[in-house]
Amino acid sequence: MTASLQRVLRAFLEDPAAPRYGYDLMKAASLKSGTLYPLLARLESQKLVTSAWETPEQAGQRPRKYYKLTGEGAQVGRLGLAHESAARQRAAAPAAPRARAAPGSLG
Image (spheres, rainbow, N blue to C red):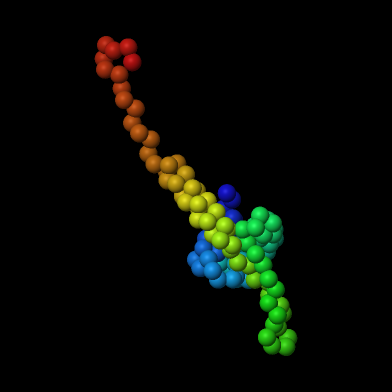
């Protein structure tokens, strides 16, 4: 799992039921649009995220495309982030000391 994907999933999982628009996700995940939008498209093609356009309420406002985690997306995101966290902890853990053979033994 890439660092970019981890940041996007964390942003979504802050409130999994809340729809998020692209610029909001860019700020929350500290990503540029060229990284974020292809990632969102991939998540949507995998059915982990849905999207919908919002019609502007006031004249002059631009429409926004909102993204939302699906139930499966939230589950996959939580499991993936937990797996990455466990892998980081294992990598950071000091190596267990190796047992030394007793003098005169064959070990």
